[in-house]
Amino acid sequence: MRTIRTFCVALASVVWLTPVLAVGQSASPARFEVPAAQGGRWFKGNTHSHTLESDGDSPPEVVATWYKSHGYQFLVLSDHNVFTDPRGLAHLVDSTFLLIPGEELTSSFEKKPVHVNGLNLPGLIEARTDSTLVGTIQKNVDAVREARGVPHINHPNFRWAFGYEELRQIRNDKLFEIWNGHPLVHNLGGGDDEGLEGVWDRLLTDGKRLYGIAVDDAHHFQGEFAPGRSNPGRGWVVVRAERLDPDLLVSAMEEGRFYASTGVELDDVRIEPARLTVAIRQRGDFKYITEFIGRGGRVLARTGANPASYVLRGDEGYVRARVRDSMGYMAWVQPVFVDAAP
Image (cartoon, rainbow, N blue to C red; front, top):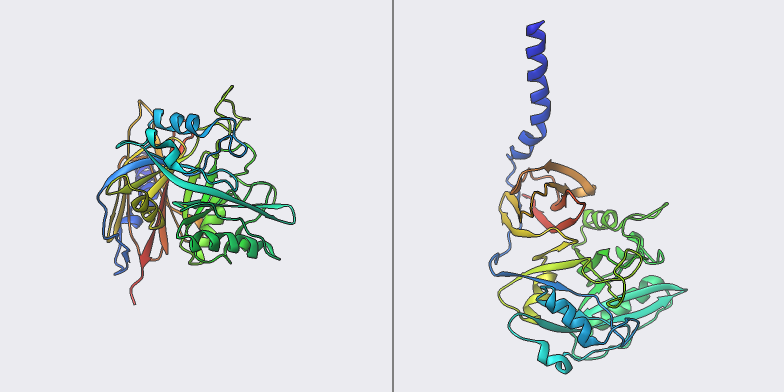
């Protein structure tokens, strides 16, 4: 009986260790695409917020002051078809806080909302329409590009407007919202409609290089802060750049040098030719689970270690990381693409 018990314990250990060992056994010459620059500082910001200039409840100065006083280093005021010139709020800008000019181009197709943010814009851009849903999305992305701004496609699941089929046809886009703090956005999907992470993995699996943003989409800065209201502080990005500069920040985002979060903070993300490492900032006695995800949305590895590390096998296509803490808050590390051997 003792022999049988010893054998069962040993077998259980093998079953538990096998996935971990497989992750570390890389005989493939494939490599991660390692960014040329992995230095710089981390800057926390929000790229989607509203004021009294459109459908928010507070003036631009109150909105910008909220973010500055809550530890954000940059903000985009993205009112619907309204451009708020940051020069009017220059007294709030200093070495610790930056306003990036922007707008939410707000259009529709057959009652389906099409909202595309423009970041780092020179001025107001007129929203566009088209004879198809895909065409309407594309024309607004194009409008931002023509102004030399950076587009990000907003909340596809707001009113179930569009999803994978439409997004896979869009060109010249690199950013879209995978998490939006507005209570009417269905981030997790429902019924037969996919959640936004699922859409993201399908697009990545298709070979589309797209990076995922978390935002507030805040409208309500006055009165009660409650789940049914569109309050600030729910979703943000943390961008790695050499300094607090609008051009550097938006360029870094388009290169995937940022993570998105609803509450989890990271100390570092390190990409080596055969390893991806995520260092999580410890908060109190919180515990963390990190999942590394690859082609097809497959969970490649899961660990409670901090730092969490994944060793490349070579067949993943891409690897991204999702960190969840013991309160349910999240961080999403952008996909790192695999340069497969010829």
